[in-house]
Amino acid sequence: MNIKEEIKKRGIFLKKRWGQNFFVGDPDKLLDFTSITDRDFVIEVGTGTGNLTEEIAKRCKFVVSYEIDKRLKEMIYNNIEGVRNVEVKFMDFLKEEEFPDGDLMFFSNLPYSSGTEILKKVVMINNITRGYFMIQKELGERIESCPSKKTYSAISVFLQTFLSFRKLKDVSKENFFPVPQVNSTFFEFKRIREWEDRWDRYETFLKRVFSKRRKKIKTSIFSFIKELPEFNMDLRPENLSIEEYIKIYEIFSQSKNKPNS
Image (cartoon, rainbow, N blue to C red; front, side, top):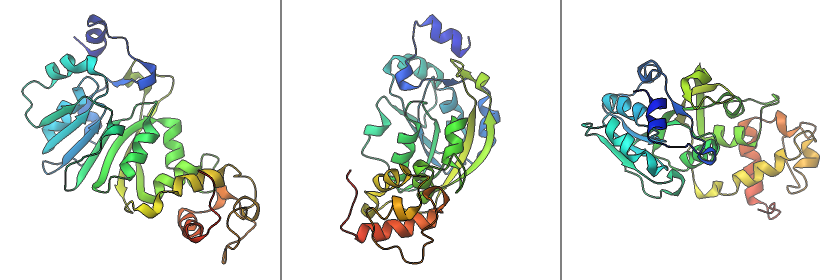
């Protein structure tokens, strides 16, 4: 019985608010793009039916997998029966506050409804040092976008400040159930900068700057930072590099003229 048939047999109606689109393609073909080893401790978000979880467990040391939908419990346990190096937590990953010590690897078929929020939480968990995720293609383009592209945005800058991204492959929408309207992309990431308390207003700062992305920075940024030495004031927010944003944020952090939250 395939995943689609099993879900229907159990009378489970998937919820849009949880962004449930389960991967039903060949797990091995996907995981062959990764470098998961028997030394890796994996944090998986979105157990789904457990089909990917089972295959990840065969390749790694241990998996802690998070699933918000408790209706899938019996189905998951049937699929991972006999697999001893998996712990499934039926809770919202975004509400988790305690994680294992040591280097962690992240893996997720990210829910369509909360993918960026999950990645922002990953940024703040410093011992997640690398990982893999699938995400809808358009959002993936925003995440890995670079200056002067239309897709370059606050979320591009925020995530790339802490993580480097590498596109591994596009994944056709036919590999998911229910079939979504768009294709997905499979990414690898590595941590390049740790989260510290000094970054706590970084996202707010970026959102305010990008709210005027087509205005010159002497207009968009000077409203709350009076001096920006060594910067071309005729540039626009969409033209600035990640490193330039970091430098400007450091000036902003020392300024008393902070934007409203």
